[in-house]
Structure formats: structure tokens, C-alpha cells
Amino acid sequence: SVPSLASSDGFVHCLLQKIPDELVLTQSSSSFTDVLVSSIHNPRFVNNATARPLCIVTPTDASHVQAAVRCGRAEGIHLRARSGGHDYEGLSYRSARDGEVFAVVDLGARLRAVSVSVDDATAWVESGATLGELYYAVAKTSPVLAFPAGVCPTVGVGGHFSGGGISIMSRKYGLSVDNILDAKLVNAHGELVDRAAMGEDHFWAIRGGGGESFGVVVSWKIRLVEVPPTVAVFAIVKTVDEGAADVISRWQHVTPRLPNELSIRVKVRGQRATFQSLYLGPCASLVPIMSSIFPELGMTSADCREMSWLDSVAFIQFMDLTTPVEALLNRTTSLSTYTKAKSDYVRRAIPKDVWKSIFSWFAMNGSDQMLLEPMGGFMDGVPAAATPYPHRAGVLYNIQYITFWFGDDTAAVANRWINDLYAFMEPYVTSNPREAYVNFRDLDIGENAVSNDGVSTFESGKVWGEKYFAGNFERLAAVKAAVDRTDYFRNEQSIPPLPVEI
Ligand code: FDA
Image (cartoon, rainbow, N blue to C red; front, side, top):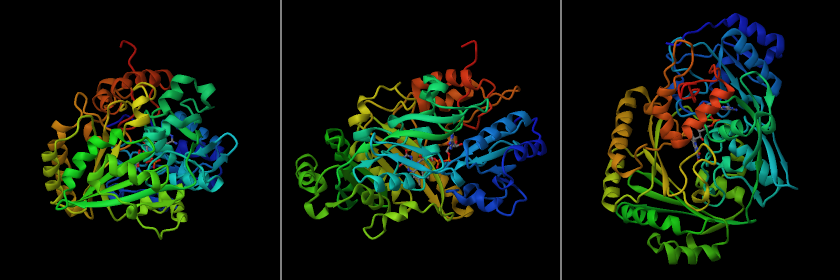
């Protein structure tokens, strides 16, 4: 358990002196539970066993975040920053540590403005905006501007940018963090700092070093990227009987040779593989590329559709042509499906026979999934130390495994399935370290231990930290020591401060 000198009453009292009452929700507030669950994506952590925050602060201004940090430090209460609430282990709104008293700073509630500047193709986006809100605001301002970030529209900007941000346009434009120009952050002293004031090391760390560790990022200045007025998309399904294993096997070799403008991701579910593609160009050029480089997929002009980039975002998410783009603004998340995810990176193509075996894992449960996100292109040209995200040159693709279940009685089976599949995959993915993606957070790969002085230990952090950050972990720990030596911003997988003697 974690030592706590917390003064709960003192914290709330301090907050109420600095923040309007209606922005501080204590457990007795009538809207407390509604706000708490509003952005939770995974009902695994909505139960009586989950420790509830002491209170939820819903800032409308950076000064409210500063107040939360200053009061938290003065009264010994730690904060969990929450933007979109999609953390796979719920670390933005729960503590997995016995007895830890904490408060949530919920940026998603009210801090989500997006302000686009077409003249210099940049935007400022507040951390609480969802990716859907960002995409919509950008594309409605200019149909030839876009931003590379994840597929799911309800993911929050704050957590997503903090961990990297894999996009279907990453082969052309990299990760979200490769396109961040500035940020405003509340540091461990409660000061509001921008890039110039925080310094380049701190700015480096917040672009991919994982959420929570380095302060609360209030807003981000991003570089928008160019897209044509119409793009081309397709989604082609191959069943196992139609040779799905052969086609995926081939896809691994083809992907690095595709033009950077073309990305094909693969979703494996049941006995089917769906090849979803975005091409930043017209069908007239996509069809010949596909037939010359990847004829095994059998794509023809009948599969190809042209639409605006914003429509393509909705199409790739909802997989139908009738859902309006306004659905990207819907922040409602469903609490019906329990999930657990794990991730891997592949640098050497997995043999065809192994793909056949992988499909037999998916014969066991029709709703589990494996998502393959192609890398290469732009990603290959970024040095591994340019940002904390180290999985760059030579990575063929990222794998995300997700198991779904619908009630406590099936949890054990689902968890056993994903753990067994992860063990089966070990020989075919990266090793030493077995790389993982921090935004697909997985507490199975390790958790921080906290020493008697209340600081997360470097040795415990290294276990999981080198999997997410490889050679960048130690630099992250050095930045942490420089900006937050007493480890105020911490969670079960936050970057620990580098000890002085190392
Ligand atoms: P949440 O608010 O839960 O925060 C996540 C972490 O960041 C927590 O530790 C939190 O404390 C911290 N944090 C949040 N806001 C912060 C802030 N303002 N300042 C500092 N720290 C902050 N990823 C991807 O790269 N590509 C993809 O396509 C997808 N797709 C996808 C789909 C679905 C359905 C899910 C559930 C998740 C993804 N992801 C993803 C993973 C996603 O990028 C990851 O879960 C993000 O951390 C979620 O960010 P949120 O702000 O929603 O989470």
C-alpha cells in the first residue's frame, strides 16, 4: 500500500477557495457518479471494488488545473488527469493501489475547444477534446487539412497525444506526436508553462512518454497536414476459406513497398480478416497500384470509393456509408463491453503456417480481435530517440490484441484466452525487449513499486518502461527527476525519477 499523508477535507477546502463550487464535485454531489462514468470506456472498473476519487475537478480554465495541483501538493492528495477516459487500465480515474486517496482532474468535461488557423495550417486543441471533435473542427474549417491520430472518435486528445498517437496516415505523416509544435502544461509546481518555459527536454518527454508523468497538459499546438479534397477507401473481407492466412502473410511483405500515401490495416475477428484502407489520392491511381503490388487481395474499382477525408474517418470507424459525420462528435461511450488489450510489434514477417494457427485462436471466440497497424514509410525515417516513442525504423506493424466479454462470469475465460495467445505469439514478435505500445496500456507487463519516501522506484519502472520506451526510458526518467523529483504526478505506470547515483 502507498503511504498517504492525505488531508481530504483540507484539499476540498483549499480547492473551494480557488475554484467555483460548481466545478468541484465531491462524492456527495448529485452529478458525481454521472460525471465519473461519463467517459469510462471499459466497465471493468465501474464496480464497488474500484476506489472512487475523493472528488472530481472539472476545470474550465488552466488556472483551475493549477489550483488543483497546488492544493493537491499542499494537502498530500495525488491527482489523476483524465481527458477521454479511454485508458485501457482505467488509470485516469482509478487507483489500483490499496488506500490511495486521489482526485480526478477531468479535462474532458469542459476543456475541449479547438481553434484552427488555416493561414499557417496549425491548430490549438484543448486536451479534453475527442479525436472526433478535432477531426470535425479541422475538416469543417478546411477540407484539405487533416491531422494524423487514432481511428476511434471518442478517444481523448490528452491521453492519446501523451502516448504517441498511431494513425491510419502514420505511413505518410507519422504519429500525432510528430506533429506537435507547442503545448501548455501545468507542472509539478502548479505553474502554467509553454514549450519555451518548460524547455526542450520536458517538451520532448510529453510527446509520447505516456500520460500523467510530466504534468497536466492543458492544450496542444499541432501542425495540420494536407489531404486531397477527395481520398479513396476500401474494405475487403477475406475468410479463412478464402485464404485469409495467405493474404495476411503476403500483406506483411507488401506493406513496406506501398507508397506512403497508402495504408492498409487489418482487423482479424473470428474466421475473417478485414483489410481497411485509406489512400490519399483517387481510385484511378489506387486500383493499378493494388493490382500490381498486391494482386492477392483481388481489389478492383468496384471496391473503391471516393469521399472527403472527414467522410473517410467516419467510414473507417463505422464501416457504413450512411452514418453522418456528425456521429464523430458523439462522446457517449458504451458500458456494455468489458475489454482487456495487449500489444506487440513485428519486425520480421510471421510465417504463413503460423497465421493459420493464429486463426485457430480466433475460432474459439467470435468477438475477440487482433488489429494490425502498418508502419514503415515516414515512420522509418524518424530516429528512435526523436520522441519517446521508440518503435520506428524496421517495424513492419503494430499488433493490438483485444478480448471482449459481457459480464463477470466470462472474465476469467477471456483473460486466459488473451494471455495464452500473447504467450503463443512470443517467438514471432520483437524480443529483448518485447516491445509494447504505451497507449495500449497493459499492467500485466509491470507496475511501479513505491518506496517509503513515496517515490516510484526506477528499478520497478524499468521492467515495463523498457518495453514501452526501449532506449528512451532512461532519458524519460532523467527528465522526470529534473521536473518532478518527489514524484507528485504518478500512477502505476508513470515514469519514475532517475536516482541520483545512476
Ligand atoms: P485517459 O483520459 O484515460 O488518459 C490516458 C492516460 O493519460 C492516463 O494515464 C491519464 O492520466 C493521462 N492523461 C489524460 N489526459 C492527460 C493530460 N491532459 N495531461 C497529462 N496526462 C493525461 N491509440 C492509437 O494510437 N491509435 C488508435 O487508433 C487507437 N484507437 C483506440 C480505440 C479505442 C476504442 C480505445 C479504447 C483506445 C484506442 N487507442 C488508440 C488508445 C488510446 O490512444 C489511449 O487509450 C489513450 O491514452 C486514450 O486517451 P484518453 O485521453 O481518452 O484517455
